[in-house]
Image 1 (cartoon, rainbow, N blue to C red):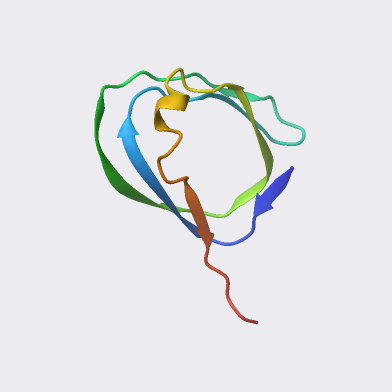
Image 2: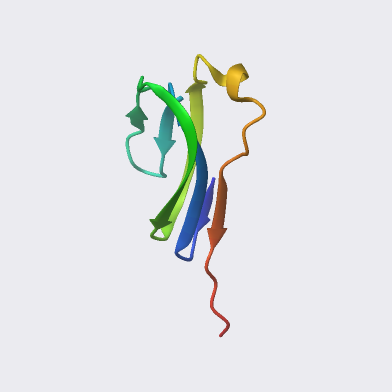
Length: 86
């Protein structure tokens, strides 16, 4: 379990293809099942997403993408939290 106290940027190298089947868990709430999604592959592009802070949670990978090994050399996803000095 962990949380993201601050807003953040997620930077991801996107080549399309299958996503992982994940389960998003939060204390005292039912698990949110997020099934895998199939999509066409394409030439890789960088995607940047602004993310709001998140309360305590954990993410369980139920099953990795089918084509995970094909993209093993791709850059990993990077999440950068924006922290403020107080």
